[in-house]
Amino acid sequence: RLEVLESIEAEGMPSLAGADFDLSVAPTYLASLRAGESVVTEDVRQSRMLAPLADAFTASRAEACLDVPVRHGPGLTGVLCLDASMPRTWSRHEVT
Image (cartoon, rainbow, N blue to C red; front, side, top):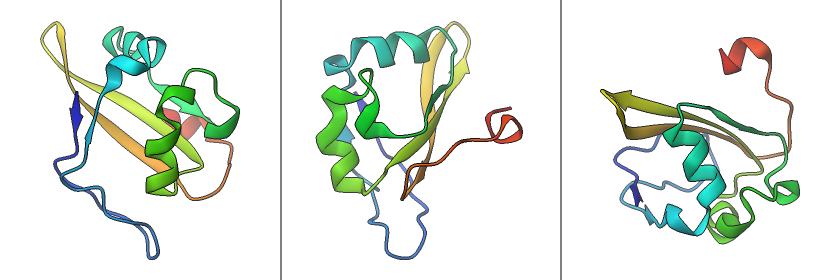
């Protein structure tokens, strides 16, 4: 499960603070994060990996995402999620 502890959003974007998501419905996404890989998506509506989380993205008004795993030791501790309100290409600098 992913619980949103803090949410900082641009004007017009809803706060997700306190939201709770079941990531087990998106096993490829969860496996990538557990492997320490960032998930970079230019258009969430076109992503098979994120399709099971479509309702969550619709609710948050996110159209593109850059999700970076946060690790402490061998396990996945959290995820830093950067969302955009429209499809976009993430620069190499942003991903790094």
